[in-house]
Amino acid sequence: MPLIDITCKPKSYPPATSDGTKAQQFTEQFGLSLPALFVNHCELLGLNEGTPEAAVQVDYHRFHAKAVNAPDMWVLVRFSEPYPGNKKARRVRNRLDDLIRDWYDHNSQPLPDIAVDLMWGPTHGFLEFGNTSERW
Image (cartoon, rainbow, N blue to C red):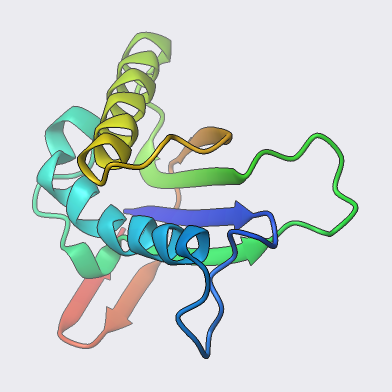
């Protein structure tokens, strides 16, 4: 079950109460697309089969205005699944790189300055969210 944090520069951080700028709208759309993207490619990304979209959680954060060497967007993915080993972890990284680039291409947008970090568990916990009940 991935927990995804998207940290953005203020110009790309989606506002909670308005539509925001085009850059902010695309950051929000990108985040909204991640649950389906991960679930639709669960085998390639090393997720447990049957992971529901509601178990892929996405949150947005803002870099400090004086952050140093910050990209437009930093995506931190924390998998609850056990570490798959270096070879498979590199395959997951490469596949996620392709999927993110494809998403931006499909939406006719240039890839922002982006950093993506992947981390694995194992972690243990539970989720009760709407009709979704998960244990790991």
